[in-house]
Image 1: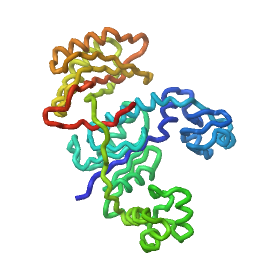
Image 2 (image 1 turned 135 degrees about the horizontal axis):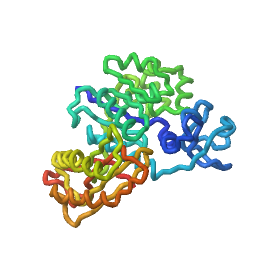
Image 3 (image 1 turned 120 degrees about the horizontal axis):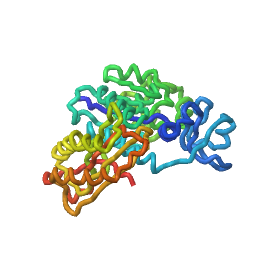
Length: 357
């Protein structure tokens, strides 16, 4: 049976966050990084990329290529927090998640929590939720192994969605430029070109022993990729430390009474079901509030014991909401999370999650 693998890659992640949070930057060439003499571009918006600006480029060269380039400082804490929110969405479908960086990850959805048969439908839902909840855009690749899922996510960026089915893999690989192969950088590509290898078909047709004479043990990996083979599993890391849910509302909430009603009548029942399903117990209850301008805050309370009583959780929610000040802002999203577990579940289950430090 073929596995169902999704690769999610956020489009121009750092730069897109800055454009989202600062409307004056939208539609303009933006670079995240330091603009000084020895500065380096950490990320570039798609507007900047049209001028040839890219990550790891010196700021000096970036400004030469794009005189109107706008530099903004890196806000790593913000990117990490948003990345964790993206992973919360992933966990709605599977706990088999392998983070590659803050802006990309592999998901194995062969068996998934939602019971959705087609992986492409899960990818569509994830992309939609990222847009709806975070106002950011992701590209997704879907296939039966990690290599092809990764290649597929790059294929139609930005906001791309590409599926490579097993019976179409060779046709796709045949036309794939050697530079697009995962793990083949500029220097390796040049060495491939010197051997007359410029695409997947030429790589597949090249004798393995001759390839190994040039690339050593890496030759087997390249050879397998050219044949659509990648047996590496999606490897989840770290231990999950929370269970939660989030709701984005069609109409913004404008009063504490509305917020309290939504938390008690919609989010809390959903959270209790999730806690029961995950066999998860914790001591901290956290409310996340995201306002209409996409700013957000969290408020929480930690008990000395495990929170296993619904009435107690309702009392905590009511207490926390008294500290909320709406001023002139309305609320577009609410989240409710339980964290700080004392122990593993009675079933010995490990809660897999990426730990953001």
